[in-house]
Image (cartoon, rainbow, N blue to C red; front, side):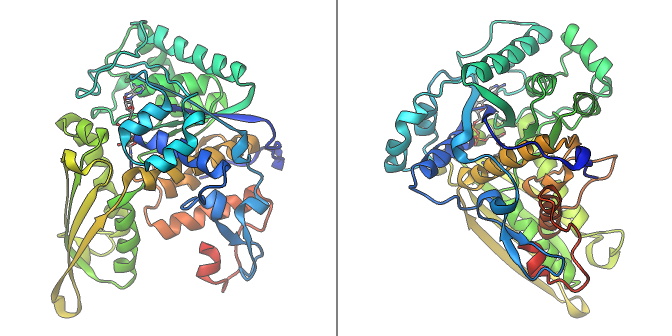
Length: 442
Ligand SMILES: NC(=O)c1ccc[n+]([C@@H]2O[C@H](COP(=O)([O-])OP(=O)(O)OC[C@H]3O[C@@H](n4cnc5c(N)ncnc54)[C@H](O)[C@@H]3O)[C@@H](O)[C@H]2O)c1
């Protein structure tokens, strides 16, 4: 459940907002370059609900209004970008290396991107076996690393005269971690920091540092981070908003668009086989089995809640769901995904659907970073604390609230997003019976 807005009064969206990204690779630099190009009036904010979205204004859902006309959010000029990475190059160097954007786009924003240098990373190769780099903090103890990250946040905000900050993890997918005792309570976690507990990952150090500094935190990767009880407890205690996990892009986005359609027509599904080829650094990291396992768990979770085996064993009980990712360097960031969906209909007759999605991973992820930044900042100014379920729209594996996994259906998620935007904007929250679905979706 979304927590209540404190006293119903939202603080104004004035002043500068630091956007802090652990991991300045393909997604982070594509996001930054895009925002800079928008500031220059070169491109439109395609894919951003905060910038382009429209929601129903009245209870009948007949009148629509632009999200940015009703919800107070910072202008793009108020955002100041920063982050950490194990590589030393500027955001321009990293964007060149990622090879997502054209030379013309990059040249246009080069002066701005060249000013952004990553801070030294809290890194442990134990968690990301296929990477190593020189821009890494010297501190070795976990407590000292967390303190150093807190110092980075304070120093960055002071240097850039920021009023507030938001953090979005855009770092590599860490190896699969099974939650254990050290993740269960804040006390155990803090003892773990002092004892250098091996199950406290670098991403948890960033999250801990951000929450201690009052910075809302979103996890764009599938690794265990703010979705462990200890860090949820810390978010509640410090009064900070959190969200996660794993940006919903590409194949999973398509899955959560198609599956609700099959469910609403009571079509059966025998199986869904998904495979991808991907050649960017993310693909290289996921080539290690322990890192792929983290991604696989996240990708597999999406169908279960939409195609409900318990409610409809006759349609979904025997469904096989498989996901593969192969690292294939020639393809770079331009991932290609294939889905084979074995469905069945009237009298059990089988049919097949093939989907071939030639996508661009970071192009799909960048607007999500922008929306998460702007909406988490709104949540913070409204006093919203803890897991922000209304942001599930953006994630493959939406974070549980009180042990309940939020809905995976993209359209249900979009309604929840709109509802909370209306609430934060002081518009009627619930639409009247009979209001059109299109109006609710916006
Ligand atoms: N692009 C998408 O569509 C998409 C979708 C869902 C999730 N994701 C996730 O988003 C993340 C970023 O994706 P990407 O394509 O930008 O990957 P990338 O490899 O280009 O960038 C990740 C960066 O994180 C850095 N890094 C790793 N560990 C770090 C640490 N401890 N501290 C600081 N920096 C660290 C790496 O050096 C790298 O530069 C990945 O985890 C990916 O799985 C991406």
